[in-house]
Image (cartoon, rainbow, N blue to C red; front, side, top):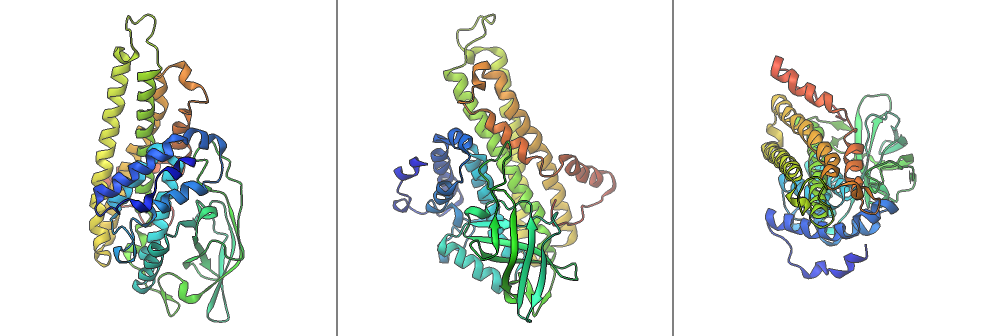
Length: 406
């Protein structure tokens, strides 16, 4: 990431609106694109890339303006994630997850808690990681001495935590079914992040496992608890549709990046087929058709994703007014967008090779990283279950029940 040194981000004016922040994300994406394929191949921990997100201000996008944040909404955050993901799907995922963990205090915490967290996060440009995988029921939280909570256990995934300033922990209070979330410094004693993320895609997300060995936090840090009691709100359950929209947008960003990179390759390197009678690959009828087909599908999926994100703003704007029906209806729409984005991203990232040619499969070109990234993360939760949520709602009016995971 030597290219980061060429831009003095502090000398640039701080964006003040959505279009300005999206333009800033495009500038960051251009920096990342320079050596994206080489960095993917090297698989090194992305310290420089995360520093770039900090220096450019993107990490503060959702934070309060009064404390140095961008003051933007989720619709803008999703667009920023998509823009960054065009160049590097791993960094787009890290940024999207950061936004969710930063927002977790507002989703779950008391007003006093989330205001304090968001102010500090914006002022210090914290980067968030999360040891939050509710499928792993092996983190137990026990009470000690009346005013302390002790987290102990292991999570099989901990995206971004190794390169973060703070980590969101999640566990179940001993002897109960109560989930407890708390934000702790990532260098806390008892937190050990393991270098065991070795997958075909999203290689730079630092999504390895974490051991949590007696990490202590005060009861006062338990998000949403007052006098050791949690008062649930429907808004607490908006975590799944919110993170699913993060997924949707970095899938679409990866797909857009694949299409742009392939088009550049076709213009500059692809040779016309010897039986086609064309002098340039860009004049091949089948090449033109594929690019037209894939672009139309991408634009359609992007428009749907943007529309669903905008529908969610009403829920974020008035958290206390959300009803279970509001929440369920929104999740159905998100599920539909997830199904569409998954299909479109997988199709685009695999079919680009049809219009770039055999030489484009050279490892030095790095075109395969787009498909590997999408293929890896779209397995997070089976898309068939998202289609089922939509189908059940259409046929019976059923709305999905809230869960902590998917």
